[in-house]
Length: 195
Image (cartoon, rainbow, N blue to C red; front, top):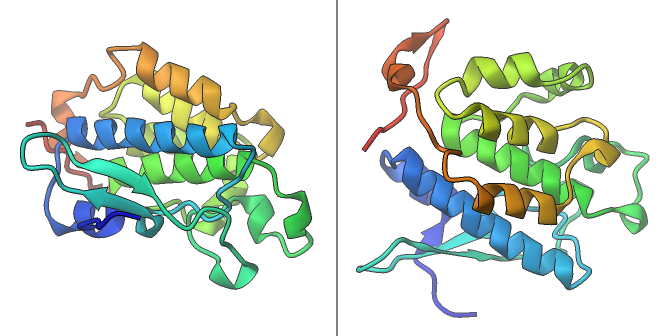
């Protein structure tokens, strides 16, 4: 693999990035995951530290997905799907839908700077819309709905990667941000760089 300059986790936490840059990175992550799924593989451990960044001086950063198929229950992360964290789930029955959950959690994290606490995951069983709307109100309803679907508690309700890819690449208004994004939201402050 070629040399990369760091990973998504470090890149996004090192300084404020625009919502547009984050969205473009999300599209690239989806492109890479689509390629993995087309090869009939599941990543199983998709998380920001496994997404590498190659900086380009004259263009956007390039995304590379690493550690495909390398996961164990001892490497559990905030980005693993509920079925991966379920102790009764054997690794021989892992489906590609676990990657869709991880992609949804990565998208949520990219725009909010936090993950959904596993105690909150139980609430997702009863639909995540209020939770998503509360924390992602500054992005378009279309993107909120897509993230909600990817974070569906039941794996058979999550979209396929082809559908996610098509929806992210096929709509130009996915990133309409609300100018109120810099306002205080209940007890937490969510800032969105509107450059």
